[in-house]
Image (tube, rainbow over the protein chains, first blue to last red):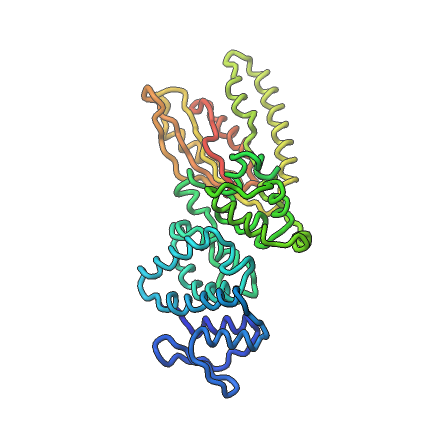
Length: 172
Length: 218
């Protein structure tokens, strides 16, 4: 159930149109990136370096919120090793996204993009019933994946409710 | 009006239901359809409609100048509202058992033509993105001696392009009579529900009447 950190980071780099450089995973979770003789260690630090290189400046209150989300991805999602912790994360996100369209403020940010890549594997393997259970996450994810620059080469996850309509027609 | 009267509780509930798994009214970005719906809503919905409220707050966050620059968008609910003709129920009550066959046929033909026309009209107005509906039909037999198994078999023999039969079950109505509840998934563009009902009603030996128990857009 572990998430491929290196793949995640290189997708973020290609979303921001920067050179990912050489990313290696030395210790258990902290990735190291070396590019142009600068060596940076740590998931969020690398993403911030990417942002700097693509001239995206995030400051102020939204910047702080975005930083918190990146930390959340690094600490919780990338370390989610059991089905139980994945469930916990999805539950948290589902509650939170019930009142939000995007994670931070009112438009997609690097926080959404990072979370998207971190969750992609998990969402792709959810059963239809679970997708329904975490409806708010599903809605957010479906909305994010429609943007081709975000989705890149990832397979689009199917959120159609056809199947559920046959199983439980009364609710659909 | 897209979701019925958005000033009424029912309209807001419909909007809330739609926004459960949609971030925007149309497609995956804010469009004029959002603005229209936003304007006709007027004020923030009750907190119990959490999805509608989330959407309201989101649209509310855009500046007026930004709003006018949204692209236009089709409102899927507008044309896809109640597809089942409300007149259908009345038709069922009108069955005149003693009428001559001729008259019946002529009338049926007329109704059929009208429906086909209405259906064609409806179809031409419908945007292409709407695909399928799930329909639950109640098929009622004449009496308790009707062979329900045979009836189900016959119903399932109906084949149309874009029609898929789903699960079915027998539901007791009373006095030992059961009705057949059968699910189906149809492609809106290809299958007319009225036509489907008529096809089933053609098994006169078994079927007394057919009702649409549930009709849902997928």
